[in-house]
Amino acid sequence: MGVLVNQKTKRKVESIFSKYPPEVIELGLAKLTQERREFAEQIDSRKTVRARVLQNFREFLKEYFGHYFSCEFGTQQNELIRDVHKFANKKNRSPIKLVRALSRGFGKSTILSLCAVLWLILRGDWSFVIMISSTLESAKDFLRKIVEEVEDNQKLIDDFPELNPAIDRKGQKVSWKDTDIVFRGGARIIAKGFLNAIRGKRNKQHRPSALIIDDPDEEKDVVSESTMRRKYRWFDRAAMKLGSGWGIDVLMSYTTIAPNCVGEVVFADDDKYPADEGWDKKKFKAIETDSNGKEYSTWEEGAPLAQLLKEREQDPITFAREKQNEVLAEVDQRFKGLIERYHFPPTDSWKGWRLTLGVDLSLGKNEKSDLSAIVGTARSPEGKIFEIFSDIQRRRPDKIADDLIIALTLFPWEVCGIEETGNQEHFHFLIRDRIKEYNKTHEDKILVPIVPVESGGDKEKRVTGALQPLVATKLLVLRDDSKILYKDLDEYPYFGKDGPDALEFSVRLQRTGTVSTRSKESIEAARAAKPKKLADIRGNRMKSMGIDPDLYPGK
Image (cartoon, rainbow, N blue to C red):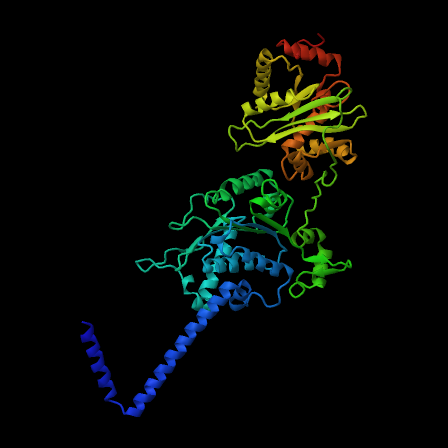
């Protein structure tokens, strides 16, 4: 068959050649040879460019994304380029978890969520990327920018045709939408918002190889304690669990919009997100100070110092957060920077000291309920109050009772106050029964009085009013190892409120004289409701007997 084809081709060529003089045929062959040579050179040139840009991320940016970067890079951009190179050669390294607090307007999203993602996909380091932002719409915006570049950046597509949409056997795009795209080369990117379902995601046989988390919070999120708790829990239990079996890269970039934003919580908690588990964390500022005390812009070409100084003058608080990534206290953060800590124990003997224990309940039926807190304080003979015990965690009612029994045996408490609300009265019966059972089988009996503590009204106002004067005057100090309670109080009311609530209960029980477990407002209301005239007293007595006092005037 091959011989017949060759003979037919030969006859066809001879037929064409016979129609033209030899000099024309010679010119045609020369031109064809030149075109083939130029085409081969173009192929070689593209191969050379591909090899060069895939080895150097900075070259990749210059070659294909110059329309985004019209001026020289500054400190932050150059540092990010070095950071992106850390993710190269995934097969020969451990997973990387990189967290960067970056100045708003300095190009972090373009460099990381657009260019770095494409570069690492083209290199083959990442095959399945999940883009995560504060909302699904925000994440879709990041994915949309990738699609726009792939569709409109002809130079990029010419050199990397594998970035074209994948086509199935029917000639249709496999997936090319605002939440999910699949490239011809096999890589996949999906967009997800915080709290969206992401477990079980796959790209054929590939599990997610990278999480790109860009601006994980909105302003409306950080003002809601319950929302932020759900987001922390989702980050730890859903997002971070994705790569627990095979290892997954994490690249988080954020701006410090509030002390309790997700990025700031991850950045500040070295116990939960330690360096020895791959966490690499760093903050950047738009304005730095040199060794001579002179301020300078970390990106003079893109954000001149004069411009930054003007922004700072117009809105210093927003500038400090969004450009400097500084954690500033909100107007209502009354404990920020005031808390004094000490090394436990405060004394060798509790003689002459008054010890009280406060319990803030969370009686949810599962581990997703709010935290419960058990906090104890000791007041010295001089009147200074030391926090000596804190146990703050998410647990069920029976576990709270078990832990409270343990706490009651640790110190010579004089009284224990437990939060009392309408739906939590049964816990008081539960703990009393537990104490009875404990005392039947143990020689060291629990004889601590258990009293209800009222927790109604404005919690923030109550906690701040009771504790802030004591904290500010250093009459209330915390243990230096009470990390959760310290953070709750330091960031109050933007972090956990349960620890400070239990602390307020304990401090309330420290009052001298007759112990009152009711709030000042409820006491005043009760006094105001008491009858002040003899006729009123008689009338109330008759009402209690079921008699209408109006029918017996003067009785």
